[in-house]
Length: 125
Image (cartoon, rainbow, N blue to C red; front, side, top):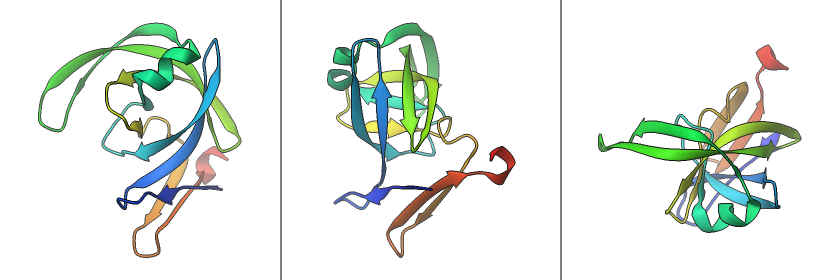
């Protein structure tokens, strides 16, 4: 089981490790179930890792704006599991962990008790 936490602003977060061709880092990502990608990482964190250019991705923001961004490949470690996935770079200060990275997991956010648990779905165990 993986445990997340709530930041000072009451937002759910999860710590993940990110590996590129030239380095690795650990980031605290905001859990964003409205983001259907895997991971969105601030540019200053991503550049030193030497992420591999992969392609591009078109997506729609909550306000209806359509954006097209370059995507990169990286290895992401979530708990004990690692997977190769697409990463979008952002000018934001926050990394976002999206629903694609949570595929095969059960996410339980209990705002009342301030707990976050992620575990493998029985279907994928």
